[in-house]
Amino acid sequence: MSVLLKPLDLVVSVMAAVIDEPGWTHAAMAQHVGMANAQVFRAVRQAARLGLLLAEPSNGRIIYRAHKAALAEFLIHGVKYYAVPSRGRITRGIPTAHAAPVLASKIRTVDDAVPVWPDPDGPVRGESFEPLHRCVPGAARRHDRFYDVMALVDAIRGGRARERALATKLLPGALDAARA
Image (cartoon, rainbow, N blue to C red; front, side):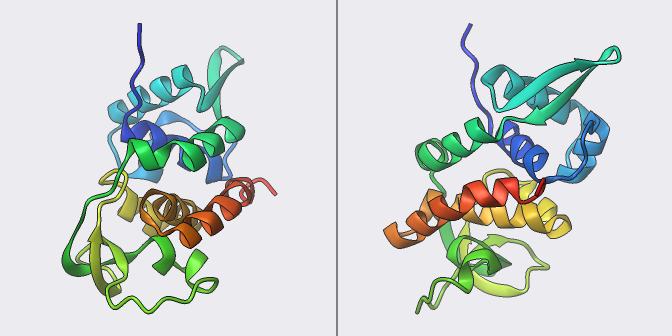
């Protein structure tokens, strides 16, 4: 039986890598990403089947944790082919890719229209950049580390060569920063 990766599976795997909560529950993860428990339950099981999360039995229940090496490998080498972002009109939103704080201080650009996840409460105006999943902007507002990792992922998904190279270099450290 083939198993297909869905965007929420990847988002949940990234959140699992960056939150500092060993033994998190499906309900807690649903709150972190801002999705329904049932959707997160399915995403966790799917991500575990794909090897992005590791399932370990503990006291009669299954504890999930991120398989950071597999996750980093997929994000660096596969996500740009799996989730090509759509870009659109100028809108208000949350800066991503090279415009996000994690990269903005390291890359000087002269872009007039920075990439943003569309969000009516976003702090800047820029070019619409489709997030990996619709829950990403809200989750990024609640979790700084998640925001950093997803911005690096967006630089890999839709950035120029220099931006992709820098994001590829920073991503493994950003995934490990939560446990350091």
